[in-house]
Length: 343
Image (tube, rainbow, N blue to C red; front, side, top):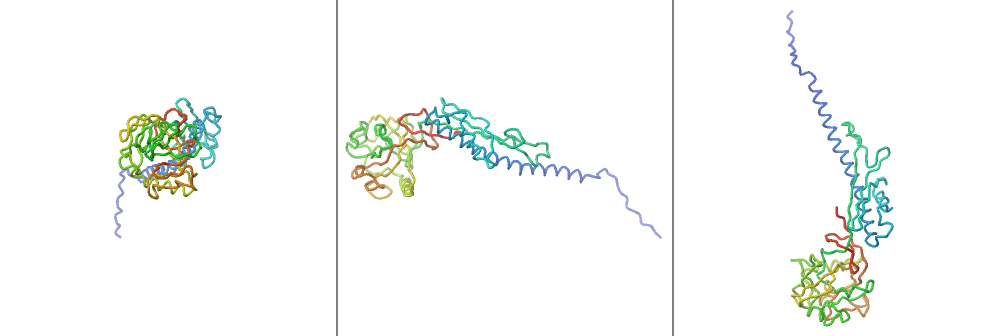
């Protein structure tokens, strides 16, 4: 019987190569798992901590903006821990630090993770344990500044005299913007007084209703007549919709205390922004959006804005705004206060 020759087996030293590749790939897969699971978990944890730090810093700043002697205007304020924990899914967070500077009007709150059995600010990892990493530190800071706005956006291009703000907080009034001797009791009142023929109007940004205003100086707009400022239809319609829905419309209005020049060459000396709760207006001689709730019974009969009146009806209020886009300075007695996240 003829025997078939068995094929020879070559020993080339490559036995076990697949096992090595699988081992390497397994490490890589664990690494990707750590990225997908652990990093996602860390991101979610940090988001919760950031929300809590934001809320705590804003709350402390609001207290300080009203009264720096308030017990909650303090690095030991109970607001910080309560709001930090309240924004954590498990109701637990570690208040790492509160740094308060009332001179610079800033507060920074840093929140950290809190997990049973671990050091403060640390959370457990899962897949990353295979790579020798059992825990990771997770913290989130939030910085807030408060102060009176010095430069920023005004949504509607008007300015009113400081004497219309002083001693009239929480009293409804008509801020007349056109009409001879419109504010006879106000030394700096517009038309017929400080700005002859003026509309109390500020120069608008191109194609915008309002403008970015610097309280150091601002020039009057090019319209000294009786017609409404352009590009404001959408804004006024939005105000009307909010008021019909029962919402407050509070606007930061630039305030001036002196005027030079007349008509289109007028320059207002602005001092601050004041918060005005709008109740109605008449800035044109037609219906919406130029006229809205400008007469009784929506407003007191004494405040009706009839032809040739142009004006806004409402109340100056003490107000802490969370508006953004403002440069802030020292708190001024006649102005609103803005509290804003700075990082």
